[in-house]
Amino acid sequence: MSVRGAPIGAHRNDDELTAAGAKLVPVPVDDEGLVVSEGVRRAPRARLIVVTPSHQYPLGVSMGLERRLELLDWANKNDIWVIEDAAPLLTRIAACIGGASLNASSDPAKTLSC
Image 1 (cartoon, rainbow, N blue to C red):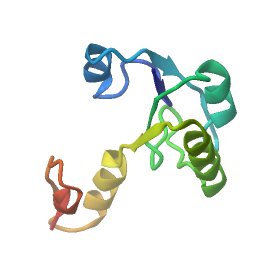
Image 2 (cartoon, helix red, strand yellow; image 1 turned 180 degrees about the vertical axis):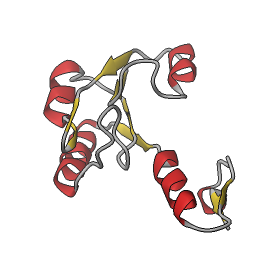
Image 3 (cartoon, rainbow, N blue to C red; image 1 turned 90 degrees about the horizontal axis):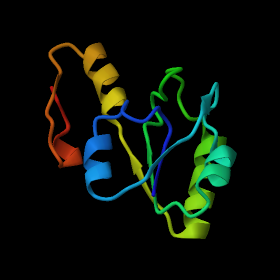
Image 4 (spheres, rainbow, N blue to C red; image 1 turned 120 degrees about the vertical axis):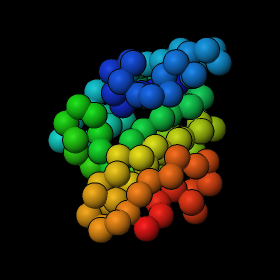
């Protein structure tokens, strides 16, 4: 089971997660980011959480420290994997740096190159 902080189909990896057998559960986002308490209610036996904390869809807000800690507390207490997709943040950083380009690499050290 995968908890999503965006509508199903909005994330580029939804097809891959579904093909791997994940049941995607949408969780609302408010002005502070992913509503963790709603994720706990909707998916109490979640095994994986996929978030884009630097740019929460559909509002575009960043997940603050309090929500991040709440998310990590839930994950730690329930042996849940958390995947943070940082691509939106890297895109914004690249737009601010002259001559920057993004490299779609699985190696985080090679994700942003200038």
